[in-house]
Structure formats: C-alpha cells, structure tokens
Image (cartoon, rainbow, N blue to C red; front, side, top):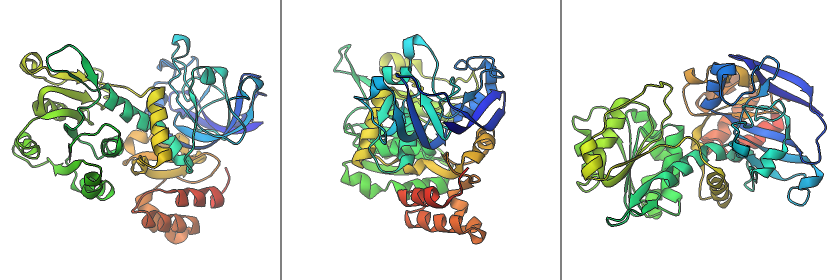
Length: 420
C-alpha cells in the first residue's frame, strides 16, 4: 500500500513524500492514521537530527516518519494479533515503548510508523509492549490528545507525601488538600486544571496563576468556578503580574496557609522560586516545564527541605497506565482536553509547522493527515473564512462550541477538506 508521510532526513530536513509500505508480517498491523497533534518534542527532534538519542543515524539513509500523538483505525491485522485486535478498531499509541531497554519510539525511530502519515505499519514491539491501545471515544482528535494528557496524569501520580511522620510515601497529590498551578493557562496547564477538577483524587482548592489577563479569562470561561464547585473543588484564577507580594496574595486565597502541592508550568527561575516559597510542610513541588537550557537552575530553600520536609519531583512524559487512564476518562466524558487545541491543518502543513513550532503562538497544532489544509489558528477562522467556504463553516462550528474544536468541526474537515 502507498502512504504519504512526512519524514526527517537531517536537521530541519522534513519532506512530504509518497512511497510504498511493505506488506505486513504476521506479527504486524496496517493502520490508517486520521489525526496527529504536533509536539514540541518533534520540533526538538528536527532541530537535533542525527544527534537525537531516539534516531537510528544516519537519517540521510534511514529517514523516520515524525509525529507521535496520533489516532486512527486498524486496517489489516497480522495473524498473531487477530484474537486481540480487529480491522475497523480505533486506536491510540503510547510511543514510549521502552522495548527491551531501547529508546526507539514511533515518531522518532521508524521508517514506516509515525503520526504524520496517511497509513503506517505498526511493528510487533508496539503490541508486545502493550502500547497499541483501543480508543472508544467518537472524535479522533481526542485520541491524539491522550499522549500529552498522559504526561499530565503521570505528573499528578508522581507527587508524594508522607504519612504522619512515617517513611511511607503516599503517591499522588494530597486528596482534599490545596494545589497551586503556576503559569498554568497554556495548553498543558489547561489540561492540568481539567484533571484537577475531574480526577478521582481531587484537591479541595485549586489556585491557577498566570501573567496574561486574556489567557486567564479564556481559561476561566472554559473551566469555570461553577463547574469546579460541582465537583467539590474551589477554583480561583489570579494574575500575578503586578502583585507586590504574590506569596501573600496566594496564601490569602488558601486561608492564610501554604500549599500542599505546587506545579510549575514555565521554565522561568522566578516562577520556580515562587513555587518553592508557596510550599507548606510536607509539600511537593512538581517542575513540569521542560527547559531547553541544559544549565537551567533556580534557588530552593534547603532549610525548608530539611525542617519542613519539602519534596521536589519532575516527570517527562507519562507511562502506559497514564495514557490508558486518559483514554478511559475521555471515553467516559469526564476529561475533555480540547482546550489544548489552538490550530488545525493538513499533512501539507506539518513540515513547516514542526520546524517553526517554537515561534508559532498558542497551544496544540492538530493535523488531519489525509487532508490538504494550511495551518490556521481557530481564532482566525472567521476572518480567513470570508474567502473560503470551508473555513467559514469551521468558524461557525468553533464559535458554537465556545471557541473550541469539536467533533462537529472534525467531521467538516474529514468530509469537505481536499485530500492530500
């Protein structure tokens, strides 16, 4: 079968190509990719080329299909897996295979599987690692968000607290405690607000900060104080830009107390240090943001580490259990990370978007891999739709869903956008 895919040949050398996929072996699966969301990790892969730890250099002779946040349908199932998988099933992928200790992963290391393709061959190690996951929600784009959402789920699970002076670590945020989400109205921060409100283990109070009033207002219109209250969570949004004493202000919103859990969503030294100052006894600080500066550092109060039992954790990605939990919550309708999506495009937009991703504002860039569609911000659909009937329809669909992407919008793209 022929596929069209974006493959990496070297530093910033991404090419949209058509080529033949090999016939599947008995332990492989042929799949149709429908959607992929572009991750900053793919941008870093393109920047590093052969130096990236997950590629099988040299890329010039071993090009890899990029994209690892993808969702689609199974087309043909090899004999080994026919009792477990069937054609027509929707699927999502956990790309972190950890197969026999190797770093190889779909979207980084393989010539025939990655998210930015029309069709792919799923190799045996994906199934053997339990990383081909059945997806039951209706909209494909939600499956593409399960991988980034699993990173958030994993971070929540990585938090820990001690039990009454013992050395037993209770994993997860403090149930019924207080949680501060700093610089948390970007795409991943929005997912963290969603999870805090709807996860089985919830805090009693969540305080969300940022320094952009428009982004805070947008977050508050999507994840409302009223919805949080219905789930037993007191939710507050605070702009810390001009506060003379942000610690005092945030403590005031927490009954004068420091916080049990603090998440930092920006690799900015003052934000990290603010998080440290907000941490209460037995508190856990999660440095979620992934810095690009290998020497990034910040000051922490080690007096409090010693006497107040402060903890520090950081995670990079989620595991298979985290993505399974994300998929289950999406299918049940208790988790809706659609607020992450700010742009949409087709396979023809992937190469340029991946290379320039750090310069394009907003959140997730959602790609429909069988379609030709220039990358467009959801906020620009109305203006750009004046000369384009499809974009005009998409603008109306997005507007009717509070400015968010939706299955209605996805169906329009799948039905009316030109094929690649």
